[in-house]
Length: 320
Image (tube, rainbow, N blue to C red):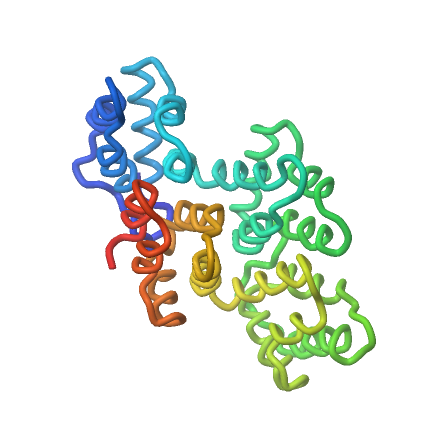
């Protein structure tokens, strides 16, 4: 029943009783009106594994799917958070990817957020779940919905073939840095394939060395070069890969900040990160957020959301 990571705000509930929780949720939805506070109290304080047990107990005692009942009782952003919390991590990722490619237009940000930040194993599982749930491969879906070099980067990430060892080949790191420099800053036009080959294939420690070498050769940070050499979704995906290699919590902190600053809130991004990272690394995301923006994530969410949606996000955020 443990959490999937050890740096989350959501941890295993002590004295867990799936049947009792199922009854609490049943009670919250019985009769007129819905007791949203009771729903938040249960679901925001259980791990994904514990929520699966609650779903089973609910089906046994009520004869219905918990997600279906919650879906008909709730609406809007609050409903999106609650339904997301009920899903296993790869199921939620697959569901988000599917929704990002639904209908006209594609939410590229979703494809980037997920595929640039997940491990090989996570991507393999997402691939399996997607095929099972939606009857086609994720690669086919992505290929049909994106184009050009952006598509090629996503397809490369979907192969889940990144080297995950921690060995650094110094000579190769220098060569990689030179190759990227010569493919971008040092020439007219950009050879994006070189960037893909290095950024999508090499391991994290090796890439951190490549970024240092790149700075030496070009006098610029790799991120600055990507910004000046590329644009649109291709720029976004390469930047996301670099940022995730440097620090995933910092990457997610920035995504959360951008989802809330200025006018309006990009709720899809806010919800996706709060739900997906709650029991993995939310503690680290919160401390990065404070370090980077001088304000707490808690205060940002509080000022930018309202109602039960705000309440459940603040519970997932876990205090100040």
